[in-house]
Image (cartoon, rainbow, N blue to C red):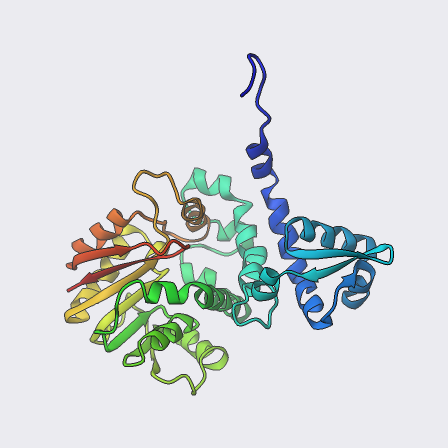
Length: 346
């Protein structure tokens, strides 16, 4: 309790002000290969050994490793007058590239793309539009031309989606019992990671990834192999091309890219093609109805401002979009993690 006239120590404000220092420490450690090097070493290493292995300055590496230890991304032990570093279980699982649950590519995308756009957050709030033109010198009228501005950038974005669904995919795919739906189309299925989670959870169902031709081609080449049974492909633009008839359509992190008008247009196209009794599954980060959180969804909504035409929404807002497009019996399931699920039926 502060005494009269005493100003409380602004701990939270200082933490928030310095938050980007934490992010950049994580980004640098991943980009330099710290966690991969320690994993391959199979024993604790000194800063000098890590620096020699990765070709960096010893003093700089010692400071980086020390900060990573402070962030609980690395463990430390004293031996022979020096400090040795090793991965924690968390960094071994989520920050080494070889882990099946690795978030390395998400970290890389945030560092090289998202972080640059957020330099212009103030401008985005003033102007109400994304900042690709300022961040990368690209016109922002065509969202996907900006997101997929090169083959390399497209692969990075798909790797981001892949790592996201490797961690969160099963939760959203099992939020509802989807076993009655035998024919499923994943619209904007990207890397196919969510389709893989779906067929694992529902072995009686098939999933077709519907996406732009160059995305499908890249998915076939880099992400989904011929051994991934019950996963098929359909090239197309879901705003322009006919959507094949299906029992269920998945829209995972799709509607948050677009304005309300575009969302209703897309959902109406889905409703038109959906079999009677079929449905649509939305996977999004839901905001609380009273705007109190969750903080991650609130920050994601700002990210949609700097990167896309869309926003994160409340469950009631998605329900309104679905009913306007003709869907009924809207159900919401919160997973307790980043992404939640909404199921509506025709």
